[in-house]
Length: 580
Image 1 (cartoon, rainbow, N blue to C red):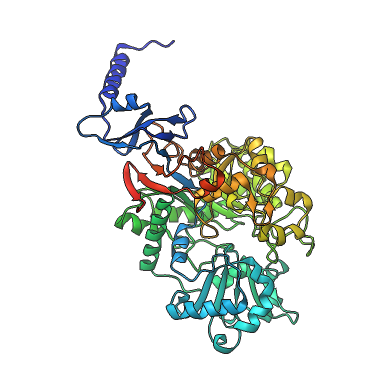
Image 2 (tube, one colour):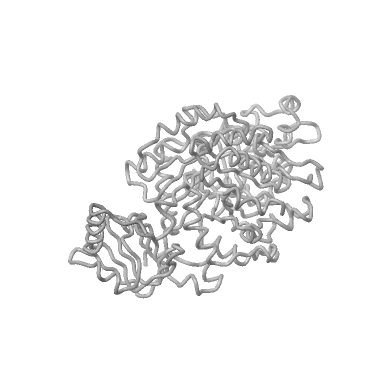
């Protein structure tokens, strides 16, 4: 054993004395506390000093840290756990949609859709300058593209730009007036390369039918009116309050340099492409950010290493903002899988089109890009839905690992289809699986819009959470809000049951609840590059925690789904208290 010199011994004794004398400014006793610290996962009490965890332990241990200035809270046996972390949330877009016309994935008749559009036009919630827009449209509508045209290209709608945005934010439908504004017509379709032509729906005579996906949607999105700074700040405030009310104290914003109305999939960033970052800055300067935001910048999928210099100029503009970090880059490897979009990149072609979807990245150069990102000390977060996109994403990360062992945790998000050959690759490559397990349901999407069109093997391994976990992968929780609800409790319950209106989506891929609690705490913090600061109630980390209305370890899945957050604390300060 190494001997301490007299100087070191004196320093150690002084530190021990200071620790022994330290008094907490906040103590919470008599609770059921899940720390997410594997060395001591469950304790009774918690002490906080200067917004950081001072100590966790038994009631007697923590009571010893109380003095006359300590605020003492009796939890009365309630459950407390770390603040929850969402590893993929377009939160400000979600805040904007909270106050806009939104069908929230409901499927109604075209008569009812037209009735609602009129009502939302009249109350202003569908109005965006002169464009009428409804968000949250189910992909079930896209099979009715021609019928939508017959209704919304004539009469009162003929001279009005109308846009219906898919709940997946990859697809949309626009009427002829809006298509004309975006320059989309038969002549354009004829001039496009086949891959891009497939992103715009066509009538038999070669004219567009209004359906749009990925690059096709980008053409229309670029012509949508952008909200002003005040509206963006209000959206940020709404999003922050809503997330805090759900117990969320941190999230990864995976497209922070893309503003509403800007193209995302084929984005060519400039140093002026700052997206929603000014809104986060304004929020920090006004009310304060009561959440940690890890904001990623979207790079063009076919970027080269030199292009990263432009993104670094954006990063430099937003340094030093409390609770805002810019730790890395987001890349789209493909699109979405539901019929009729089918732009997710698959190993085996779709059964109906005999096409493999669209791989947005270039396999010959992608590893070079990922390695260059890794060399800068940045993380990379890759959108990959199809099994080929997942494979090529892992190949790119593998090259970076061969070039150096940086220790940076890169991540792949969505992971809807993963070939079994990839399961064992995640752990050695230190790739986090950022999964939206609220989507792991036997419902209309998975059963009717996917199953008939993909191979049996691909469908069998849809959202293969347990298969990945069994091979050592780190699972992190994510929502993709506003594509779906940001409520972590709904997603946790769904991951456990995988039950949907049409049955269970592969019961073998269910996860246990403790895995899900780590997925939304310590594992998620690692995905954001913040595992040293947050994610567990470990001494020295920031005191972000929540108090719940039930014992989430003991209740059944239905009750877990309905969990309510009573209090949310950020840096030792209560920032949300549920109204009684």
